[in-house]
Image (cartoon, rainbow, N blue to C red; front, side, top):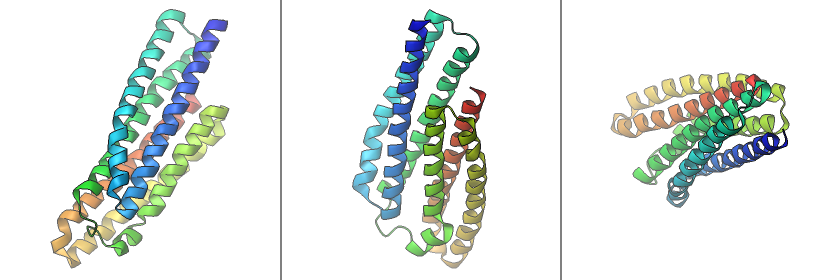
Length: 209
């Protein structure tokens, strides 16, 4: 049993390290969006390759653990949870790269600061960052209640997404010449909503484990 315990501990350390990397990507992508900082956006795009490589390594290590040690019961649930969490983290990183690409494609005057405030993009970003951190803590400390708290935050993100879409639609009616930028902004807000969904998925996996 000692060998499988060591392998499971290594898997846990790896997924927590992946989690930290993806949180860093989200933090940088969010800051680049709020400040329209192209240098930060480039860092996010550059580091995406590291996330992808790490995801493949964790997948491979999970497969090796199942093949070599044939885990059962709670050990098997843990490995399966790590596999699914790993996939969700990689998808979150993809959305972070999408946000960074938006910043790189548009000039520094692309979107009015007033529209950022009205759509509460900063609030949405803060909530999904909290969700990501709480999920990591829930797995690290193996506390289901911490994971359950994430579900309510996902509802908040969904509500902000719906509200922002209506606000941007009204803005486009007033300023039709900004329609293309506003459509892209809706895409960014949708990405943050999807990040919330993936945090919710990971919380479900932690509860399952």
